[in-house]
Length: 557
Image (cartoon, rainbow, N blue to C red):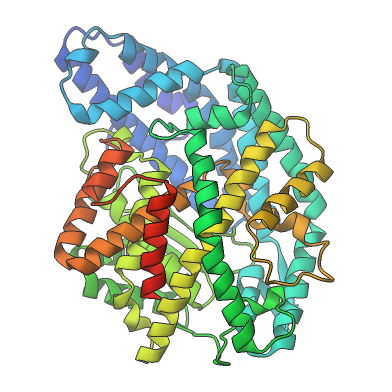
């Protein structure tokens, strides 16, 4: 066994002998190369799992300095030493005369990814990446510390957002004012942070020979199967096909609420005057109902969630000091991932839970793939798994609600959300295209660009009078822009695929489920179009395809 079972990473010296072995090892045959790939994969798995736990523990409690230091130690002391050796290993692999003799089609995507990494690798970018990762972590610390007082209680902004569903309009308005005011308090700090990130990212791109960071990221993210022009096509298609439908939903809500002015705090309240749905009471109740939900969908899915629960791989409730957002973090050695989220007992939390569960199923179903690299799938594939599960489990989510009426209401809210999020995805992606292709822009220019793009996708129904000063900072709440740049359009691409997967599932549940599982089992051992085809859907951003899918969703509504 290349890596001992009880091996623990303490510092760089504990890892160095394994890397030295891989660098120095003589490869004299196809079999030697294959074993070398297996051993390298084992080492990468151990390192990834160690890094995963450092990140998980830090985000579960951003106030614990020891956890933060453990994470930053890896980022600053271990990861920078791995990067140049990985480059050497990549070159050794690609230069091997035995590489082309490995006749395994599932290696194709791995080899092309490595060739691209070699093409863009620059040693001078290593310290820049360390600085970028360290700065990115500050976003979570700033956001995680945000809290407000409502009705005598201290609430995280996620918890306070529940008031947007209150039938008391004054309470909704109060929550909106307090949440936005709290965000504005840290606006300058976030602008300062982002200016530093933009400068560093632009330098990384220029070091690698790219005109801008956008083009660099298309290479770094391995976007082999679509181009910048496809993203622009997506932006336009959403504007033409989705925004008009969302506008009709806004207009309908305004009429049903009998409002002269439809304000930002009126967009989530139930138009029939019903109180917000509370599908669960706390994190444990959420977990137990999730188990029941997947029991109605597929026994294998239920067993995966149960195993993760037995392993303690959940942190579900929102609390002060916990990082914002939610994620499923794969654990490369154990195979069963960790789900983190900030639940506040609302319907969106149910959607988040089944979304992250879809990622978890993906992690487990692809775990048997031969190489760790095949289990590191791009977001367009990962999000297909998670967003499809939101829809596949839609009927089974009845376990969260006490009546058919409540369940139908939740399903309606979800489908409306599917439509409403697509323009937001287009806005966030288009904004990032602007940011990184306008090198040297000022903050005022950035604010103006955000407003211009936002207005382009606006329905024009919401009245922002009196709150215009808030709008230029709307992007501050989107952690992806700070922490994982350009990782967002994947949600839009995957949402289109997920609607297709759901349509297949409704047509024939077993066949639809089998195609979905088969696609997940591929990991990243096939191209994106091949994976989508295995799932029974198109990898297509055209206006015609988007129109067809949107009409299907509209009909379901």
